[in-house]
Picture 1: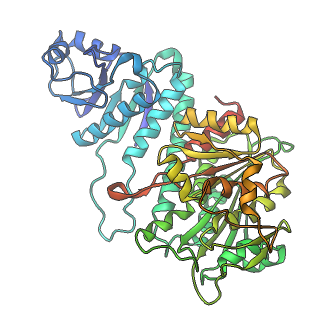
Picture 2 (picture 1 turned 45 degrees about the horizontal axis):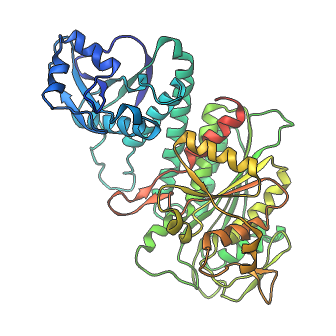
Picture 3 (picture 1 turned 120 degrees about the horizontal axis):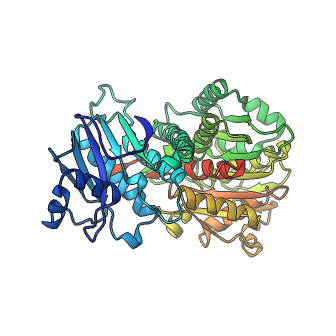
Length: 495
C-alpha cells in the first residue's frame, strides 16, 4: 500500500473514495462539510434522515454524490468531546476495513485533519499509516494455494493542513517503519516452529545486518559453553535443534554514545520440558519467541528510519523440549554471572535464557536495557490482553517506557519490583530458585531477572498477554514494536 500527503479540498479519481467523518450529534466534520457544500446539501440530507448517526466505527458508503467524481465514505467518530487517541485509531481502522470492502484502488483520507487532543499531524499520520498497515496484513506464505483476499486498495492520500506538511512527512516515515517492523515480527511469530527455529532467527538477523549495515554475531552451543552460559544451555539440552545466541549492533549515533540494549526471549517452541504443558493449545507455544521477533522488528524500524541512536539487539534462542538429555526439576546450574539456580520447574525456562543474556550485554556498557518476553501466564491473569506488564529498577526509565507506550497506543502498566518478593525465590541448595510459587508469579519472575540486571538501568516487558491473539483471530500482534520504536524515536529527539 502506498501513502502520500495532500492538502486541499476533498477529491479523488473515478475509481477512488473520499473518507470524511461525522460526529455522534450528526455534525459533519470539516471535510464532510466541504463535500456537503459541493454536493448542495446532499450529505446533510443523508445525515438528517438517520442513515448515519455518527456512532464510533459506523460507516456509510455513498455512490454518485453530486460534485464528487468517485465514492464518499462517511465514518462515525462518536462524541466530539470524547474523540481521543483510541477513538481516532478506531475510526481509521473502521474506514480502512470499509475501504477494503468497496474495491476502491485509491482513497483520500481526511480523518487525519481532525483534532485529536494535543496530537499533532506527525502523530496522526504515523498512526493512520500503522493502523492501515495492520489492516492490510495477511499471512499466507505457508498455504499451498495463495488466497486472493488481498485488498484492492493500493494508494491512500492522507490529508493535512499545508503548514503541517513537514511534520506529516516525518509521521509518514515513522508509520511506514513501524508497519514494516510489526509485519516482520508478526511473520516470525506466525511461522510454524518447524520453520522458525533458532537458526531461522539467525538467518533473519543476517538479512537485517546486510540491509542496514549492522554488526552480527551468532554464537553456537560450543561458544556458549566456553563463555559459561549454562542456564541458557540447560534449557537447550533437551532439543535436537541447535541453540543460537544472536546479537545485532546498529550504530546510528555518535561513536561515544552508549547503546540501548534490547533483549528478546527466543524460545521457538515451548513444551514446558520435563514439566510438560497440557496438550490443549500447546500449538500456541510457537509464539514464545515473540520477544525475539519484537527485537528484530524494532531493529528493522530503526534501520529504515536511520535513527541517530546506538542500539544492540540480543536474542537467546532455543527450543524447550523433553527428552533423555533434558534438564530435570531439582537440577542446579551456574549462570554466566556465576550465580547458581535451582531449577524447580523446567517450564519457567524463559528467565533461564534471559538471565545469561542480561549478563552478556554488560559488555556493551549500555545506557539502558529492556528485555521483552512472553514470560508468565500470571501476567495474563493480572492484566489480560490489553496492557503489557512493565517492571523496572529505574524510575526515570520506567516513566520513559510508559510515555512511549501511551504515544504509540501500545500501553504498559507498572508492576512492583519490591525486594520483599525476593523472599519467594529462596532455595535450600542454590543461590535461589527459578520459581517462587503461584502468588505474584509475574512479579517473582521479574525479581529473578532483576538479580542479573543490577549493573545498569533495566526494564522488563512481560508480553505474555499482548504478543498474540487466540481463537478466530489467532496470530501474532507484533507488539511491542510500536512502543519500542517510539521509545527510540524519543531518545533520538525526533518527536
